[in-house]
Image 1 (cartoon, helix red, strand yellow):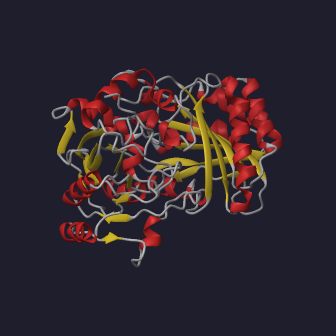
Image 2: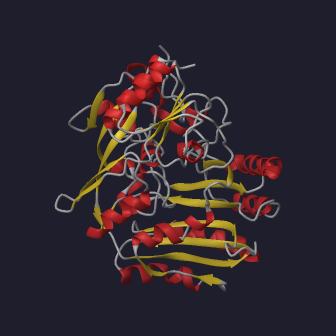
Amino acid sequence: MVKEAALEDLRASLRGAVLTPTDAGYDEVRRIHNGMFVRRPALIARCLGTADIIDAVRFARTHDLELAVRGGGHSVAGKSVCEGGLMLDLSLMKGTHVDPERRTVRAQGGVTWGEFNRETQLHGLATTGGVVSTTGIAGLTLGGGLGWLMGKHGLAADNLMSAEVVTAAGDIVRASAEGDRDLFWGLRGGGGNFGVVSWFEYQLHPVGPVTSGLVAQPIERARDVLQFFREVTSRVPDELTLSAGLLHAPDGSGVPLAVIIACHCGSLSEGEAALGPIKRFGSAVVDTVGPASYVDTNTTINDPGFPRGARNYWKSSFLAELSDEAIDALIAQFAVCPSPMSGLVLEHFHGAATRVGVGETAFGHRRESHNLMVVSQWLDPKNDEKNIVWGRATYDALRPHMARKSYANYQTEEETEGASEQAYGPNYERLVALKNKLDPTNLFHLNSNVRPTV
């Protein structure tokens, strides 16, 4: 229990508000994207700048409060909010400053990818970011950052140039190739284990317009579509990033479909040529592929399928191989999916994202492969059990085809011991050493946690 005098001191020190459960707006701020997690922090610090973050971190440490850090609030594992502790809310920190001459941008930790893209695209520039526009730049980048531009420009983390970080001690550290190099290494894929990032600086690239959209086939063609996807992804140019899915029509009909989703970030003529075979394959029932702005690509394709407040349970792993046996298992599991909001997605990981050395960044999964997402999503809490059971059963059915490597940003709360090693691979021990140095008491543990050993 925090004494009233200490709480008043915190309120006086912050420019932003400090909310308690009795304050107006508390219930809205504590809500995160995944409706599965309804938690009530004792305090919410609505930070407006780096100084607010420092005071909030120091307060949590001094008063032994569990600390959750919320950027965009999209943590599928619900780790953006805690029960009874302090929620450090960055969602009001929206500063975004583009330097079109240097092709760089500085953005605060509360910016979402939709907001980020809107500012950078004013100058015809972009960097790899989230495929759902309401995702925060902070969590996605720190976990690695898969996105539509990764084949050409690498992961979001690969485009990070520097970061201003508030450590567990309440100190400000500049992480970069010229500053704190060890921390800079750890931030690029090591998650929120080492501090709160108040500012990110990214390299930008000329992007747009792009060629993007989806082509959907009847579910009866699922095996053909996934085999075709496997063939196409074996020889795609860097500019073309593809995903495939067994999904339900977003129009409310619940019609099951086999889908290929695409974004080509080269010239429109090159995009048309590269996507021609996909548009001509089979007998499409939906074809939205064509020229589009990069901003629209990141809002219209996936946003409708991930509404705020829906209940989400995800499982994920890179596949060792997209074999015929794996394809058959995907089809069989999708056939018994209990929710029309759920689906199975394969993200092709290739190109520039695979040309970074395993040890160059904390994100060590650099082999060309397909990342499997088991997305179980529904609305009614009464349906929790059957949807979670399906998610687990589907993951188990695909386990023989997995590479034992996972993308930390898709890990769920109930992951077992060893999940961090699976997420961080051969870089785990170096991450532990960095954790021992910067956060030996594990203040920052609501993440894909690297546990200190000191």
